[in-house]
Amino acid sequence: MNIEEKLREQIKENNILIYMKGTPYEPQCGFSARTVKILIECESQFSYVDVLENNDVRVALPKVSDWPTFPQVFINGELVGGADIIAQMNESGELKKLIDSAQS
Image (tube, rainbow, N blue to C red; front, side):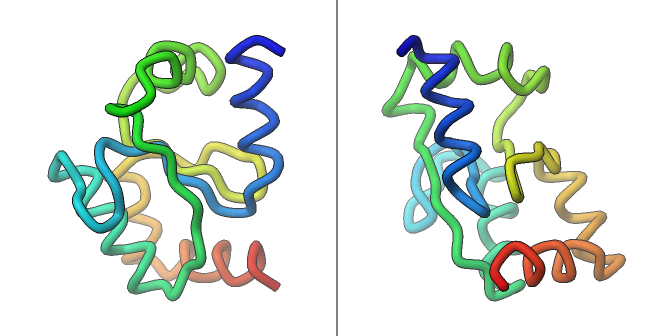
């Protein structure tokens, strides 16, 4: 299985998944920190992958998702977006609904 296949499988297997720089406990960039904070505020149970520790993921994921930057949040196998989109969806209440449906 190549890295792109592994990533597709990972995305499919996790209801809520964030590819980020660092960990939720020690984010290594402001965008990742902001996104994790929002996910936690929405009472989300999520998985994460640290792209700084996994260079092959950092290189391959933008090809899989067609999204160039990190963090990248996937819910129910679909790319939702990065920090700005997550923040906008959180403000509108849309994110909480999406998270709740993914966790039910």
